[in-house]
Length: 100
Image 1 (tube, rainbow, N blue to C red):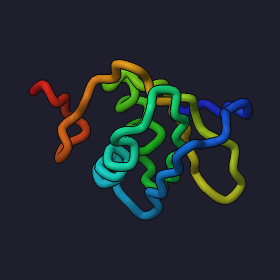
Image 2: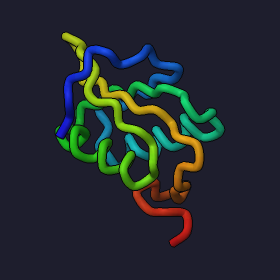
Image 3: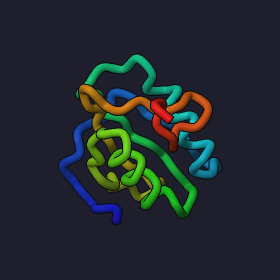
Image 4: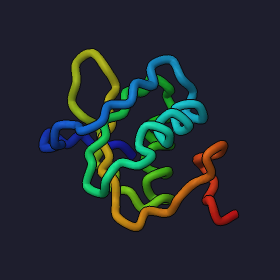
């Protein structure tokens, strides 16, 4: 599901999720991007093996653009770009819509 994309732009925000399970990683990601402007590029460092599936799914759910895996010899880094009009998620459960 993750795609290597050597053309990913440099990050405006980097979220370090080293050692975090995706649930906790999404909580940190949501907190870090709160208030960020549409178009902001976010790089997420993730060590959870589920990240290549969970991050694109979260982007699909919220409307943010998943840009793919960033080539990095030492880390697993994934890029996304924040979208205008993205669906908000619950502060305590970022895998659920704020509308539920």
